Length: 253
Picture 1 (cartoon, rainbow, N blue to C red):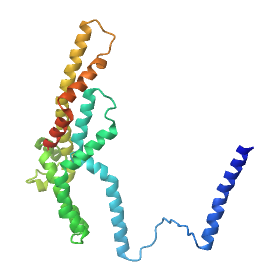
Picture 2 (tube, rainbow, N blue to C red; picture 1 turned 180 degrees about the vertical axis):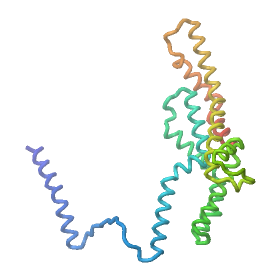
Picture 3 (cartoon, one colour; picture 1 turned 180 degrees about the horizontal axis):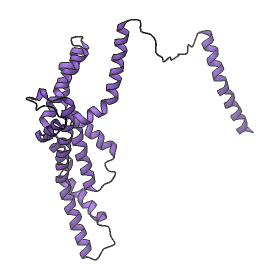
Picture 4 (tube, rainbow, N blue to C red; picture 1 turned 60 degrees about the vertical axis):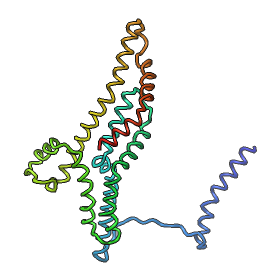
C-alpha cells in the first residue's frame, strides 16, 4: 500500500508541473521563450550580407576538423603515434582519446608560431575593422602556405601541378592552395611512414627473438606476443621512449 501511495503522489506532482508553469506564464511572472526558424524578406542589403557572413562562418566551422588535419602537423604526429602503439602490441593502450589528444596538443605546440602570425596579421586587424573579410582570409592563408611549403616535397608538388594540367609555377605564389594541400598531405604521410618504420623495427626484432627462443624450447603452443610484450614495454621505458618520440616529432618540423 505504501508503494502504491508513493507512486500516486509522484504522478500527481508530475501532473501539476505543466499546470503550474501555465499559471505562472499566464500571470506574467515566468515568461517562456519561443524559438522561431524561418526565411524572411531582407529589409536592406546589409541584412543579406550579414546572413551570408553567418553562413560562411558556419561552413568554416564545419570544415575546421578537415582543415586542422590536412594543413597542419597533425597528420604526421597521429600516424607516428599509431605506428608506435602497433609496434608495442598494446591494442588499446594508450586509448584513442589519449593519442588524439596528445597529437592535438603537439600540433598546437608545433604550429604555435604559425597561429600567432595568423592572429597578428589577420584576426586582430579584422576584429578591429582594419581589414575586410576577404583580405583577412588572404592574410591568414599566407602563414599556413609558408608552413606547408617548408614540409612539402618538390616531387609531390610537381605531381599535383602536372595532374592539374596547369602551367609550371615560377614561384610559390603561383601554386594554388588546392594544389598545395594534397601534395603536403602525401608528403606528411611519407615522412610519417618513414618514422613509423624506424619505430617498428626494434619491436619486430624482439618478437622474432622471442619466437625463435620459444621454438627452440619446444613451446610451440605459447603465443610469442604474450612473452615479448613485457620486454617491449621494458625496452620502451628504459630508452625513455615517449621523450624520444615527442622530441623527434617536434624536431622533424
